[in-house]
Length: 163
Image (cartoon, rainbow, N blue to C red; front, side, top):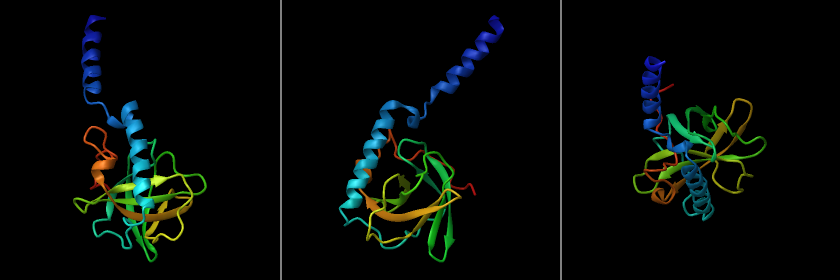
C-alpha cells in the first residue's frame, strides 16, 4: 500500500499545482462581473466596431460567461465571419456574440457570448454557430484592464494554431 500511496500523492500534487483560474469561485464571480462591465461598455455605443478586425481569423477563444473558454474556429462566409462554438452554455433561443478587441493593444482577445436578446441597430459583423443555428456577432473595443486581470483572465489561453 505504501508503494501506491507515494506515487498517487505525487500525481495529485502535480495535478493540483497549477489550478485553472476558470475553475475557482472567485474568478467565476470576477468573470461574471467582467462580462457585465463589457456589456456596459458595449451599450455606451461609442466602442462599437463597424468592421471585422484584421486579426479575427483562425482559432479564437470564446466563452459564455459562467462557462469555460473554448477554442473556436472562425470561418468566412459572404455575410461575414462565422465562429464555430462547440462548448457549454450556448444560448438556447436568442443571444449574440461580441468580438472583444483590447483598446490599448488593438488585438482581438476573443468572443464573449451572451444569453440575452441581441441589441438592435448595432453593426452586424457576422455570426456565432453551435452547429444548429446562428446568433448575431457584433464587435467592440473594450477597456481590457477593466474586464480581465492576470489572476482571472476573461479568456483562458488556448492553442490558436489548432484547426
